Image 1 (cartoon, one colour):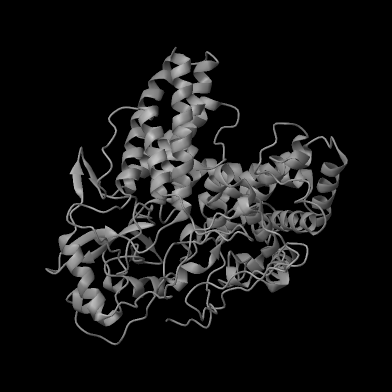
Image 2: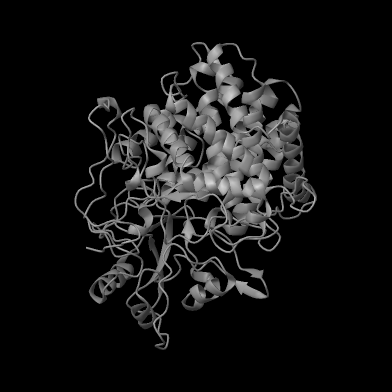
Length: 620
């Protein structure tokens, strides 16, 4: 058993959340998958025997090649045309195979980040908590509400409040300060303890003291976006039959639940405005340092995905605060949010939203119209995070549906063309930073081998034992250089979440195009664009399903890149490269399942089916 004192794991399964006897858990909320007994590992924990076994597996692994796709299972035949009935059947088959079964805590609603034995992946990320909502909201709405309440409690913890107050008092603390100067986006789920009212205790929530980078601004923006959205979807805002079951109920937002949610919303609004404030002028400035999705060295010019989701979250808050208070409970919520964020005025929201939109337009809309590359950040224009932007609530042109569709479609197509590999999207390509040429060395070739075995497998001369980087520690150029010492750009991992987000974005494009046709506007142009969109949708469906690993003929036992058994039919974080017995690089299933990616895929497939039915109805 691997004991990680920083993570406080000392048992062979995660410690259950502390639940007082007064807290009742409904039977319908028990959606957990049995954990069983497993040992907690770390990156670089393979021994020589396991490494040899893995290399033999890589030698034997032979995915199918069909219609231009590399298929890692026996059940899938690529689609050639759109077929809603066949896709519905496929979705049901994936559900039956357990592709969307996640390890979920029935008390907190939190989904385990990955179905893995790696202790590093048993932290709780804000981003993953939000993204699994694509599944939870549809399938287990009660779990979603618990998830949001738990994360609201995390944002009420002393560590979060301290970081908010420091940033609001002086934006330079975040913008010019160290890597840890910011609100956290990771905590330890095993530390969540419930009070007698059935809600988490903010003061009990622990951070991972080994963590190194709190510059991931998209995470706090996503939390603000989804907390507000969960109010807007509920009966307090709707006061009618059209309230969504995943929206906060009146019971959720009574007593301490109301305090946790409104304080978290107010504090995140204050924080996001402060980090985007120029310390010298006091004016909006979205060129704020961010590490974005990958938690590596921050870029001082800012990240477009982070800026866009910050704008979208502030727009969502603006929508909530501008709702006519049709009932006392809604008026109370609005009043409490205003009290938690007294400096966030309607005029301030408007100014920051406008400034953020100009920033995003200069990096996405303008270059795409000019036939140039979209820009996540100037040093590294193409990034899989742009697919997350394409799949998000952000509207590139709120006033023109077809214009928005054109921009989103171009963004998806060009990002795909720049980053697509055989089994997924690279997170990013080679780039320059501070005079150094860097590539994505995380999950690169033989990443899970300890340094000595890795050098041996790659035929690299022995050296002083290298640092085991694992899932972090790459927040400076020096660390990035050291981490890539044993890797190569051509062995970059190919990720799944960009494929599922791309498919979500394409369905958004399709629905906008259909809306244009239904309105009788620009019908010829919209119809032509619809044909192109459908072609891309089919391609993205095929790529997503082809990458789901399953038993293959001659390979009933499937290993993943850390040497452990690969759970069958579970969407993966990435495909990774392992050297076979002849030293040749082979792409095999990666070490981690990823509910975030699986949830996006679940949502995307449902949306594709619904959009196809809408198209067929329009054509009838």
